[in-house]
Length: 181
Image 1 (cartoon, rainbow, N blue to C red):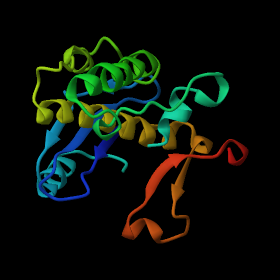
Image 2 (image 1 turned 90 degrees about the horizontal axis):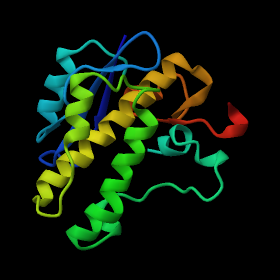
Image 3 (image 1 turned 90 degrees about the vertical axis):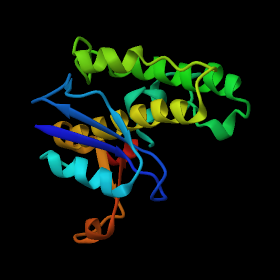
Image 4 (image 1 turned 60 degrees about the vertical axis):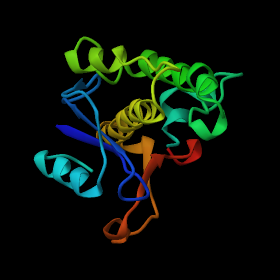
């Protein structure tokens, strides 16, 4: 089975991250190095290339509800201000937590695409666009793992809004609340 993760930009023309995971259960294979695409049409074209099932995931994936002292990681640039602080206090720790949490359990860590993604280390000397591209790729991985969770661990995810035909106008797939699992 293939799972696409799309961190779709709210505005066409802003970069969107895309990732492809594949497998019959966890851990999944990262089938290509995640990309950032600059237009919604490019994202739709990328999706059309793949047969797939269509970010509160941190709580579920990082088991934050069961580990005292751990919190949702703030890693978006707007929380940090200067680029160096964003890289050192936001993006790097977020990527490290994703690497250690997802690699091996949800994504095959030995795949060349996974290794290439992990090797993309954010540096303060990189442009904002390069750093955003790295962030978008990791967001896309989280989205793809969320889609896989919906298939392999049915009760772990929920569609918002709920309803028979609401998916036609768009939806968010997010972890189910602990009491609803």
